[in-house]
Image (cartoon, rainbow, N blue to C red):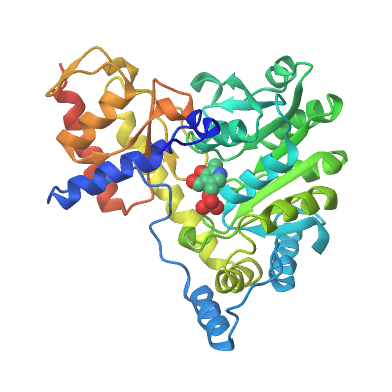
Length: 395
Ligand SMILES: Cc1ncc(COP(=O)(O)O)c(C=O)c1O
């Protein structure tokens, strides 16, 4: 059957493709260290699961308001005030089925055909595809490892053309783990303000860093009418499967997004909403504990990769990814033939070393591979040993 032209221009998610290949190999009985994953390896904290059980027992099993229950909206506004110093009311927030769905809905509500959106590369694989689905055109600004994969205010300013309407920020970043300092964020915010750009800030990894910084919305409060804050409980609370994300923005945009959501998914799952409300407004110790563990693992990864010849790594500040430049290995040969690209190298590591990573092409960075450290330290150590040995065997 023929599918729409609109979808013809959209690529399937590269991260899920590699995970699917790893699963297929596992099914054949192969031992695979899966470092391709984009989700915490921790379980959802018990008090959050208990809230879901209670919601179920109470019979909270019906439709809710499209943008979420008042309880969840209040938890979102509480969280934004507590963690980010941002003041939003119920009419200015909404819940969606994950941060991805929040972004998708926001892009559909914000952009018209041909609107340009500044997208720093390396970027999360889904941004360009979601922009294209909204009719927008990504205006990619390639950042470099030498500058820590951070776009400067001058680079942002230089990328703005007559049709540019917005910029997407994601700090800490998937895939690089790079995070902006407060000064850098403030400088970017001032450019956006002066050039009348919308700022879409994807804060999904904000808690997973050893050095949290102030929010761009508090650093440059004048941005508020043009600020769209996207977040999710997926990564901070180990709740990827629950599918709750949220948006904070001017009421006008929230109304438009609610219209679209009302004609597509309706509300996110009622039980998951109850759990997310407790995650956001309840005890926060588990978040800090998880962030500490990720920081320890990051050190392990930086040390392990740093000891491998010809692997170049700009040390990241957060999230749970490292993004080494492995292009020095392009042109060498592996058991299946020449390694010419990051995809070849990732595939070689998967098939011959039993380590799943994600090649950089989908992130707009073809010299790199993404390695997730959302796995136990023992698995990370094993994965690093396998990568080291497999790279050494290339000739
Ligand atoms: C940068 C970024 N934004 C958004 C998301 C979406 O997460 P979710 O839909 O699980 O909330 C992800 C997931 O990997 C991500 O890496």
